[in-house]
View 1 (spheres, rainbow, N blue to C red):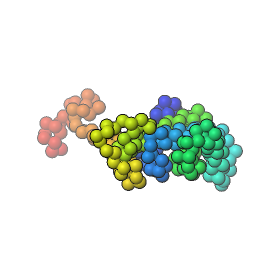
View 2 (cartoon, rainbow, N blue to C red):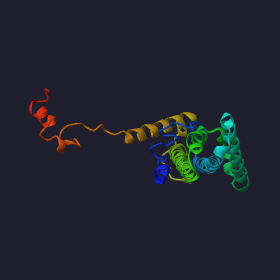
View 3 (tube, helix red, strand yellow):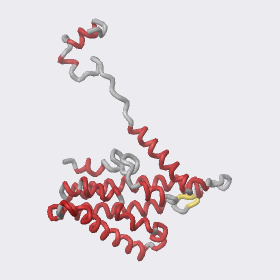
View 4 (spheres, rainbow, N blue to C red):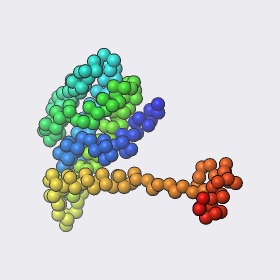
Length: 226
């Protein structure tokens, strides 16, 4: 198993938001500001890594019939810890995220990784899987939040970046703006990832050297009629 592959797959190739379209509710709800997206992303990443590690450690002790309730109990414990830490040390961010912090417990990204990966793999790959997926989720939230904050408020992480002659478009910080920006980001990412199908011919065939005097060349000489 390639540990690097388990870490990097969630950042772009299997990004939970932009590719698998999971966790869309917090992505649309909290990304009115880049700092909110960063806070939600890092909180989710912490819960992802910790819950994946614990579930991987106790997977053989969990009865199959009650595995999902057990996963939720584990996840809820880490969500509670994160909520208390934010409330104590970053109360402004805690207030901005509101109930969406608690909803991390039932985030389909976390439950999905627990069910599909952590419950079937060892601790280190599970931790790397959670870290990669969490960073991919964070990247999307920060990107969407940055676009909405810059165009909707003229700021980025609270710093004014738009010239005074340009007036911010409040549409971007409204729910409709969230749908528009997220849809545009998903479309661009999928367009970049879309690969052009490779043409099959004698010139680029990997076995051309083995059949140079065989069917491929004869077919080519006869104009492809065979």
